[in-house]
Image (cartoon, rainbow over all chains, first blue to last red; front, top):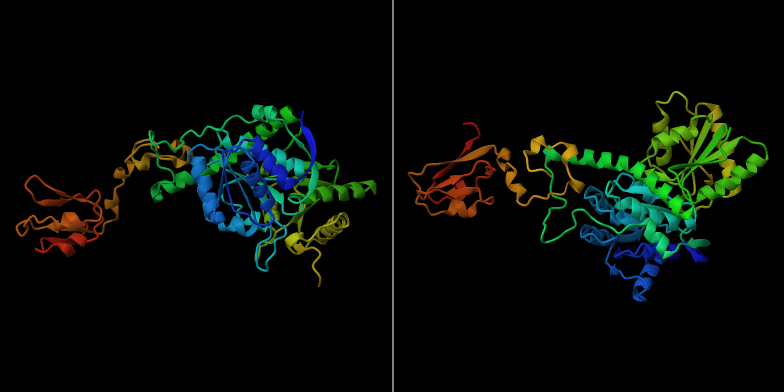
Length: 391
Length: 98
């Protein structure tokens, strides 16, 4: 039987990595990711997890060490966020380009300056196009589950891509929640051993990351793009299998009380749970509002999104990052782009908030929904508006 | 990656991570395509010292059976180091196609 325990979410990630029986963890601590890697280091030091823990000197080195370990066919895990994720930026492209199925938890954090250790999605958006599969989570159980799913998806022989598991820094990483820690035997059933088809072996030498002159680079990128897009089917199947074994179901786009809703709010990450309470409150008052949550960020679930919002009149996209100098928040830009050529689509407004750890309360989301509806009704509207900024 | 002419490889026949499984496949890369000048040898001045062969950064100069040296134009990038180093002015860099 799975054990239900009160545990800090960061520690539950360590427990998931232990149940996944990871072989190598190379990581550099950075707030608010620190507790994740601290706990894994403890598990290794205590002999509870038989893995190599490599305490590297930087995040650039962390991801570089992960490349090497995945390339020899070792199950590889790491975690980072914010400035750390930025320091490993260039190496992220190498992991996806070389199809090395590394799993990384990212405790989403704002980017300097001004210096902020608190959460938002700026770090995610900066690594949006690195070719990693990216999945958002809303609570501790989802984080635990998604780490297990991430290994299964990453290591699928038809995928072989690195996966980021996003959890909001502090708002999720530092919460103590009741979490079902699954049995080793069940995890083993769900997660087969990792076999990398071209693992480094002196007896069968291969060249990884060879240079590609103009005559072949485009072909390599096309292959990468097709592979990443096609991974969506494997992700959906992995979630279905997870539901079969563990009873908890996940989807690329999830709807909450959207039946007959003229107005939809769209969120990503842990703020979705607060937004659900707002929807409950407004529904109780007879307002036809609903919530759409984007779980799968890469590959972008275009079809699922179109289906989820097609009957609404207004869609208010809540972004937790600015696209400085751009037209809207990063999520909203992609949502608008996904809907632009559709005949039947809602009017899309964009509210940006929750930056650098700023909380958005139940009342806050109600304000956001009302403001979004007003902006949509006005017709000519700004492309986005920032929420809760003191004038 | 299948061992065939790079221009015949489509995105569909690139393997996992574009990993190269065939050793030594870089020898198929025609670096001679970069060249705008080629080395022309006047062997009547050559004393077969081999300095051109030693200095060539691409090992693209080969000694013939008669002892004279000849550039392998499949690899020669036309850098001109051989012409610069030759103590007997055997080598002249000429425009490609001349």
